[in-house]
Length: 570
Image (cartoon, rainbow, N blue to C red; front, side, top):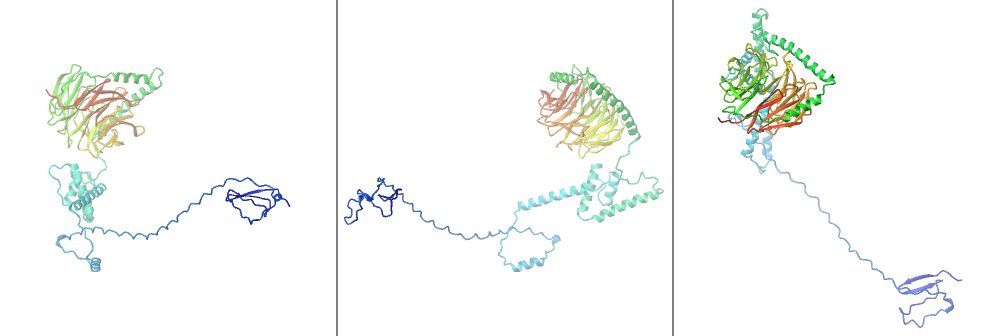
C-alpha cells in the first residue's frame, strides 16, 4: 500500500519523510556522524522521497515569572476619638444668690472622676459673644417696635407716656422723636413680658375717651378727645388750592396732549429731525464765562423764566442775583441766619425763593425786598421748588416732610409725610397735577396734589436720591443719587425704563430741557456735568471745567448753566 502524501516533520535537526508510520528514517550525518553499526538498514526501493533538511528554528525559552507575594490585609483603622468641646460659660446668679445645682449636674459630678479636660473662654471671645447677642436683641427690638401701632397725635403720645410713667418730653425733643421714643418703650415692655401693664394703659386711654364723650353729651364734641386718625384733616385754604390745581391741570394736560397728537398726525412734522437738531445744538455747548460767586462754596443756582437773571446762593447764607449776559451783580439777598441750601426763580414772574439751614424759606423780588418768610419745618431745609402756576411753593426738609405754601399769603397749605428718612428733592409735573419727592431713604414718591394721595413709589436706587425732574412730555421722570446712576421712570408702566451709569461720583441734581424735553443734564461730584439724549439716553456732551464738586444746575431756553461747589477767594 503506497501513501502519496508526504508530511515533513522537524524535531531537533532530524528530518523525516514518511508515508507510513514504519517508514525509513534518515538521520542527518552532520548531526550524527557516527551512526550505530548495529542499526537496521532499509532497502533503497522502500524510500520514496526524502525532504531537504531545513535549518533548525531556535526555540525561545518561556520567561519564568516570579510569584507575587500576597498583599497583606491591614486591620481597619480605629474610630476617631472625638475631642471634648469647651463647656458653655456658666451664668452667674443674680442678686448674689448662690447657684443651686440640679439633679442632673449632681449625678454627673458623682459619676465623673473629675479628670476630664476643662476649657476657659478668652476675654475677647466673651466680649464678641456679648456684642453679637446685643446686636441681635437690638434688631429684634426694632423689628418688634415696627409692628406696634403708635398714635400719631402728639397729645395722645404725651398722654400715653404719662400713663406709662415715662417723661412726657425731653430737652430739645420734637414730635417725631417723642413718637419714636414711645415706640421703643412699648417694644421694650413687650419684650420683657410686661404686656399686662401695656394693656392696662390702653384700657385707661379708652376709658378716658369714653368719659370725655359722656361728659360732652354722648360724644357731640369729639374735637378735644384723643383720636387716632389715619389722615390729616386739611384746611379750607388747602381745599380751595386743590380745586384750583385740578382746574388748571386739566387745561394744561389738554394742551399738552393736543400738541402731541398734532406732531404725530401732521405729515410735515419730522420728530426725529427736530430731536437731532436739538442734540446737535447741545453738542455745541461751551463755557461762556467763569465768575467767583462768593467767599464760600455755592450751593444752588436758577435762571429766571426769560433768561435775563441768574440767582445763586452759597454757604454764607447770602443769595445773589446776576444780570445776564453781562454777569454783573444786580442785587444781594441777605436775611438767612444759616447757610443757604437752594434758590429758585418763579416760572411766572421775577420772584425768588431761597431755602436755608435756619429752617425757613423766604420769598424775594429782584430789588432785594423780602416778601414772605415761611416757617414751620422742624429741621434744616434742602430744596425748594415752585408750582408751574407760580401760586404755590414746595419745600423739603430733613424733618422727613415736604410742605406746600401759598406764595401770596405765606400760609402753610400741606404738610406731607411719607418718607422714612430726610426728604431732599422736589419737582412738579408740567401740568401741575402731580408732585414727586425723593430722599435719603433711596425712594422716590409721586403724589397727586388734587387728592393728596401717594399714587406711586419708585424703588430701584440703592442709596440716597438727591435729584429728581419731570420731563415736559408728561410721562417720564428722572432721578439720580448717591449710587452714581440716573434712572428714567415711565409713569404709564410704573417701572424703571432705563438706567444710565452716568458719573463716577454721586449725582447732585437733574434737569430736563424745559421746552420739549429732548435732552436732560446731570450734575455730579465728579466735577462734571453731562448732557444726555432723551430719545436713547446716550451721552451727548460732557461739560467740564470745574475744579471741585458740582452741586446744582439749571437749564433755560435750550442753554445750560451750572454752578460749582468749591472755595472761591475774592
